[in-house]
Length: 159
Image 1 (tube, rainbow, N blue to C red):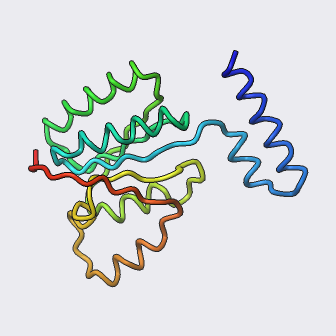
Image 2: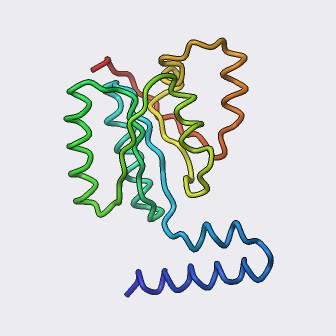
């Protein structure tokens, strides 16, 4: 019953924004659930970031998108564990595989999306993984992020 009421409230809110001429906002509300983007780097501390993202998704009623930068077998096993936990928690999830610079992958993924509320990544050190451009160029790229960035501190070894 609560979900039905929430959908009705969202529809009425979208209609109000549309009447006020805020069509983009109305479309985003009408699309439904918002998303959190979790970026996995291949570090053990990705587990801590996952727990953080999962808890936030539960609190705000958002779905989770996982942007995986690592391609090793241990990370694939970790992803399976994450998917099982998400199913148990009732959180919708999509996984996207990327390679290369994490900053560029995040910007590319979020660039045309209005439904991503914020990005969760394990630490500020992880943001420079596989990035070959100088810091000035990366800073300019980073200015293109259209949502907040949450850094989850933790130390970990590469897996």
